[in-house]
Image 1 (cartoon, one colour):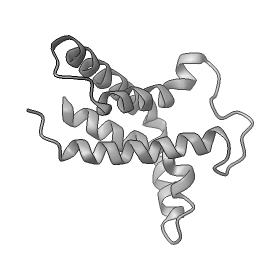
Image 2 (cartoon, rainbow, N blue to C red):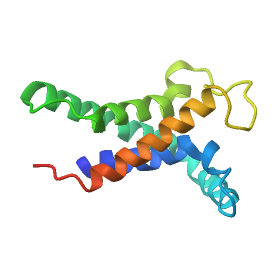
Image 3 (cartoon, one colour):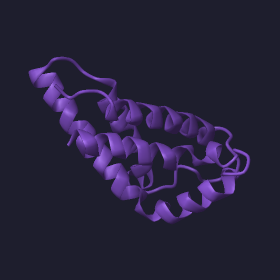
Image 4 (cartoon, rainbow, N blue to C red):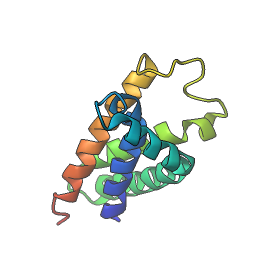
Length: 126
């Protein structure tokens, strides 16, 4: 279950951070193409992140030891990816293709989610 949370943080973070990652020289266009192929499944990644983050939030609040940042980031990634489906209106309406405004904020959060996901892969669960 923890692996699902970590992978959802990494993949969801990638989908959120693609606005910044596409600006990287030489690999930006390839990353944008990869994100375009994965984007139709963003709602699945968001649902997995929201469910696993919520599960661990409840477990760690009830039985301890404490609340971890992995869950909070997972819930944030899930909400960001599911925003269109939860509210019925697009989160990025009227935005340009670049990383400005709310897209920049989501992209920075996506980079943070990638780092937290990779950290979660190397953090022992016990």
